[in-house]
Image 1: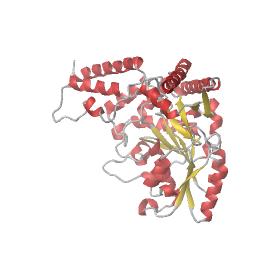
Image 2: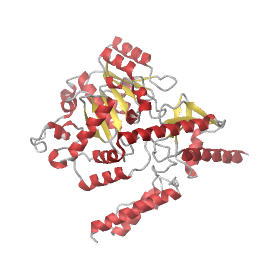
Image 3: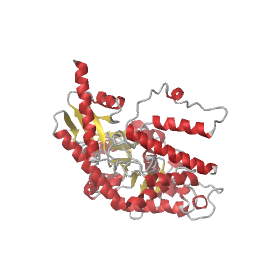
Image 4: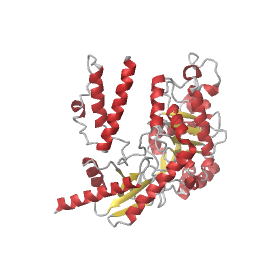
Length: 458
């Protein structure tokens, strides 16, 4: 057996051990960050160790890492583990292609083009383009960069020194503020617009904020609407926001990092009415689509926009092939890993029909969870579910305490969020392998925690 064959055998054994351990302990025992390095022997050695010792260390590290594939993992906007996607990810690592030219990546470039074309069609950009990025925050950054350059055509060459504003929901992603600081727009020039009772940006307040800024001589750069906010999973009113954007001549971006893939689900299409009016759209496949982190795409309605804003001459790299098959020309990166292959791989197995069925099932599980809450006076819904998150309280108990105890006792991993000055437990339902019994089991674990709290308080 060659060294490589032995490595693949050992990798298979490790993956098997990982899945078996998750069936026994779906939630890992929390490890103290102060002692993790010494306990797991993570120090970098001066002299290399033998392969068996390395595999032993790797196994210990993997088994100490929280599992996002567990059916009791409700903590993030991603969960689960898909074999086809992992195979695609593994082959991409083995090929080790950089996605900047056809000469280096070959037919992998076609994979990217096909996916970008399909996603553009789903969003409603008939002649759009796109670029893969290392995550939704970077996709949002590129959109904001394009909007900044459109606002000030001299910004790219001479620097940006004009005051302009960004508008986003108060419940929008924090990357909007961060990116404003990175791009020289300024975090203080981000206007966070209040939301309605369902967590959706209020278009009337958006209009008021824009009008007030313009009256004071401050011009708008970009409006960021959200398709699936991080806590409530809410969808902003795209039609109304689109009308405002066109009326004032503002770049209209939609952050669909979480909710974007729900466009493939017929029962969710009404939430997206008007989204085709936008100029750009962020789509994360590593959330709802079951693709390993990271896999994000920025879609842009008008072809040629990315080249205009991102291209730099590099004669040693771009040597005569067509722009369409030289993706580095329209990327914010030079060296770039192949994130498209894992998405293509899982899409081959699922297809759009399979994804639609998956999302319909998950929406059903959210409704099932909401039913449990409504039928038990111990629980109270804080915000009615808009998509695949459900925010609730355990009546009479601290949400932070419930979440902490669930993890400490290895019962479930779930987070919390703030809604109207209330701290709510945020149940995220995105693991396609989850069933109603897993949801019911989760609430049983909370009931058990409350009984323990009652005993402790006596």
